[in-house]
Length: 99
Image (cartoon, rainbow, N blue to C red; front, side, top):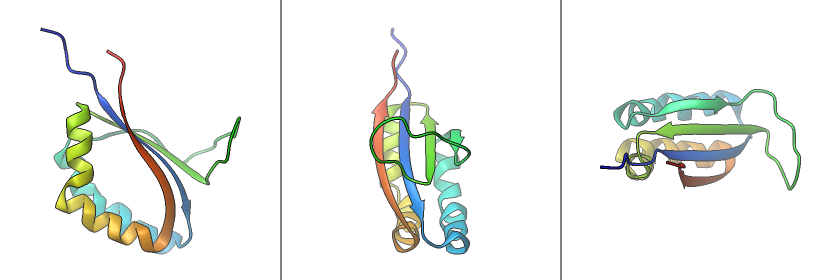
């Protein structure tokens, strides 16, 4: 039986209020733990090659695309998202990993 591909969140974020953004991170943590999230990139230096970039780039790996989807839609993450929407602008996609 083939192994299910992993799922990824890829987010590009401009943080407007770094102190309140910490509240988003703390509120999101239980959702990430519940759904097996593993951070591959979180902030750090970056170089824009094409298109418009944002100040913070995040890549989060999940055990499956379904887990990535379920985490995003969970009540735990939606509470965090409500905070994030007041302190940051973000572009985010869910991506199925290669097998």
